[in-house]
Length: 421
Image 1 (cartoon, rainbow, N blue to C red):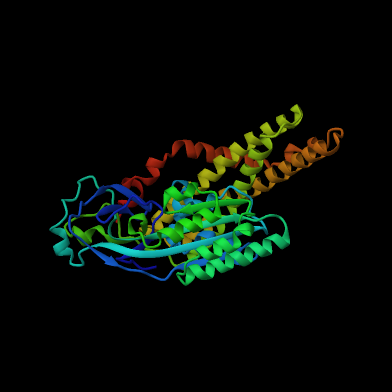
Image 2 (cartoon, rainbow, N blue to C red):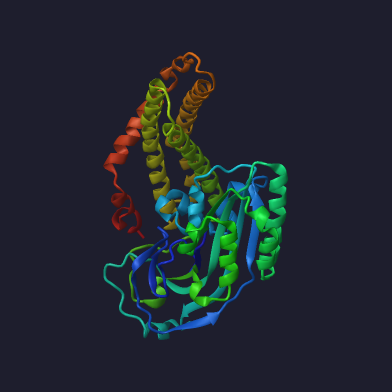
């Protein structure tokens, strides 16, 4: 793990511009800027990147990696829900993903705006650094373009799905070749209109409301050459000392994490997030159904247990977030990652998820029986509450007490986490 002076970051918050300050530990665009009044505009067109996947391939298990978001940023997105904006919101996709789900990714970079390469000259065109600055880096260049992830749900009919796949692959090929796709849309409009759901994630906020695949294709085709339609797609970051050499940073030098450790963190975080979301989605779905009172009461009990699960989840995430920041700052060693992922709070969380899922599945089974044949009450009460290990409950209480005592401000304050150089 070595320090890197210049870093690239995929844009998930488009509010940055050249001269905007950035906190790399939090991957946060700050609301302060150096107010650069002289910069360069250059054409930096890169070939269109357009990929197409279904759930049969491995990439479906890590969609943020598939759309080429940087590893350290991916881990931060998994740790911090507030970063799940733009294309990163894909991780919170709320609809069912199955054999009839397709995902297309269109990425094209068109031009770049950047500070003068000579930092001494650039310094003459910016205002003094604020005294209370919490930045580690400054955005020295912004690349503009279109970054769109399109999630499609096809009809649950194999023949129709195959015909739609043919049309989608044709569009993919033409996008890669920067060809006009209007004729393909016209030729295949009837089959493309059979797509049952279209969900858009993008750096262009206004197009995320579109609900038609044909509409989004027409927008991309129509605006490929319109510079005023582009939004930030990638930031180039320089350490704050690059522009302000006399500044004493509040933060140690940032150390990017090696791929092997990113993979470990990601695998663990994706696993627990998916399980956590599964319970949340099931509770939300069945709680909105019309059910007999006794089933409603069971779901209310499960919602109470889910809130206890939240305590475990948030406590564990907070601890892993702190460890990640300490590793990036050089205050902790990567050897601490494995013990952290095997820590009792993570083990208990996984075990408690399985217990809640088992109980929830029994309730769902009963709901299905009731909806189909109105039988007598099933055997939910045979699932003994004693199966929740007493040790688990004790540790949950410990986590809750610890969480109440330790606020986010304490975790992220410079004094406690990152001031020790």
